[in-house]
Image (cartoon, rainbow, N blue to C red; front, side, top):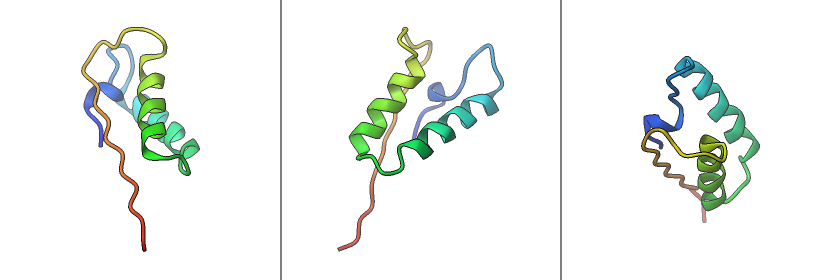
Length: 64
């Protein structure tokens, strides 16, 4: 789950943000949830201040 600030940018179509998130998420498919959250938020900020609120929740469901 994530807030819109993760994928929306004032200067681009929302589809670009969604595609960016999809590409990054597919590269992190085997990572633990904390690594996924940290990496996704870092990528969203691109080293600068965020322009909107960003929240990311990542779960890994396992079987016993």
